[in-house]
Image 1: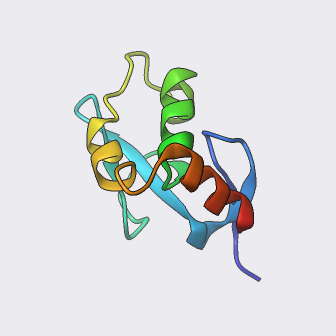
Image 2: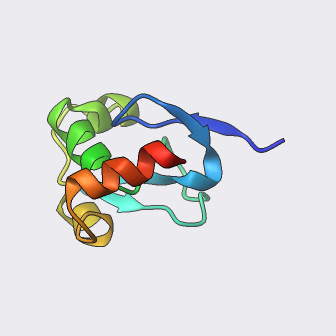
Length: 95
């Protein structure tokens, strides 16, 4: 049985393989593709909708236990550019 994590953006539980682990590095969010970097990690779906929701609600900062807001521009550049937010949300709901 595969481990289950909760997306900090939409708060839905999903298999670990469907989520992206992020860590705080120098005030920015960094993708931890191998899920092996030290420290706390926050899990999020790789969609613009979930990333923006987590950024707006400061969910990344809470999950990673940092006081300053984190820059998610790099994360959005990697995962938020393919398709419209509505298309990504629809794909997310199909899983």
